[in-house]
Length: 174
Image (cartoon, rainbow, N blue to C red; front, top):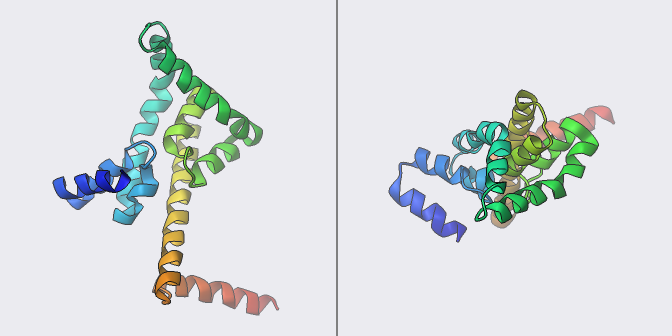
């Protein structure tokens, strides 16, 4: 399904817009758009965050008042409630790690939802989520580069530079 969504955007939009829109899709987010352009993916993924931080609480309260959307509002709150202990335990670091570790169910959307429902300061939460997104993007980029290197047997120049740097540190320390 993810491939068909990515194909749709690639076929119908210029590359930059395709990356931008792919990064805005929940569950795919920045991780799914990275192969198409990390900077654009980060911008596309961060755009919904301030709106979530500022508007999700009033929207949920309004949804609770409607018969049709009341179950959805409770589901959203329960989803955030399940994640809040990890965030509260470590404060900003908890939110950062929650967004930075690229696994399903974490990311900017859920991080912003949890931050908003915990009434974290918008500016602080936004910056923490942005740094977490950048970290997740870097983890995914390095991870995909490593996997490609293992599959092809060739180490890309970027990894060679990092490898040589850390190798020089270990030689110096010894």
